[in-house]
Length: 499
Ligand SMILES: *Cc1c(COP(=O)(O)O)cnc(C)c1O
Image (cartoon, rainbow, N blue to C red):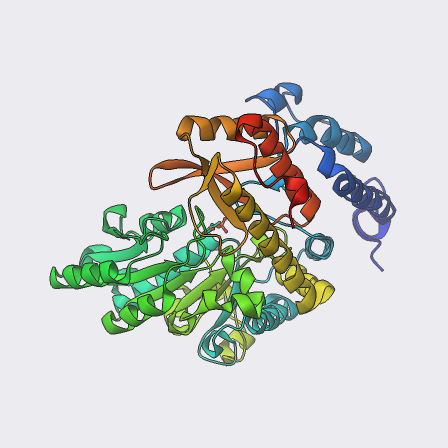
């Protein structure tokens, strides 16, 4: 029997590998360290105050010649690394969008690392592929996604690292379909001009995908938005008509459900109907907001998603599954596989040849892949559908409190609707005052908020979604903002008296 890493039977008595006994000891220390961290993270300054170069000045110039004790590494994590971290798992983290983690997810991740399997082909670890297919069907059930996205139909789901990869992969499949393969074989020089459409509010990953896929930023057409910052279908229709008349080939429209700036929701049904009429691929980017569809009362977000050719949601944002984990679904896997499947001799195997299995290497950019499904499986089983819904509902309710507080505050003005967990607001006195409020709040270390621009105006984003955030943290943040705004602008609706 092998004695594991460092065991005598496997690598020799004088091995530098960590022995199973040492791994047990240090592994327990790391798990304890993480548990201690989560207990105290609330009290750490949320935003790192490190200056550029500060960590590197404190690290040795070169790597050690002789191995070091594990305890020295863990000590350095405390002394060197922690001061250079912004605490994304702090309940007082209200910046960007959440990147929430949870116990079951972290433990699933640890197991995945310990198993160290490569899931590129079904045959390289059958359970890795089959668990992923199964969990993505579960997730489709939980979010009430259309039947075409299930593995039982023509499409199916796959875990990507990020929504950015999902958008790129969607575009490669769309390009394959729109050019009947020519885009991938003879190259784009041989095709008509290709065009892609999204709103001005879409994530920067859309432009990145357009660049990588060779479509070119100049052929990304930005669609006008309405007062609520969602796509105006008439503007999309006008552009599709004009571009087609000019000889371009519209390849893909990206509709965003929950934009990064303000969680605006594009009208997916109207966009989907236009896409059907013009034969254009519709990709729905629901990176943050898709998680809300766990709750039936929030499923209006997905209205029209059955018209989409592809869809993605990031469990690594708001579904308690630590980064990286993006669930990507296609309604028809044929163009995706046509775009990305290349079979070299060394990957040929009987299972793939039989056609009875899924080889996820053909659904993504890299060949190799991690066993990501374990952490999502653990999260879904630990919380259950009810637990996941409760998490979403709590944050949506808290965002409602923040919105009410902003609306009642004479010094503040809300700049966008609040469909979910994000409140976007500004100081009534303008950008300088808004910046001062944001800086003053972040300087305390008690909270971390980030900013955006809405129709040219600087705005503060109050984004709720960290695993540990409870009502008391949100109320403490509002009390802090109230204190900074001062007596001349005191809310008529004091935080302590909120319903
Ligand atoms: C966060 C976000 C992305 C990018 O997410 P990654 O998974 O980090 O690539 C894309 N689209 C939207 C709408 C987002 O909010």
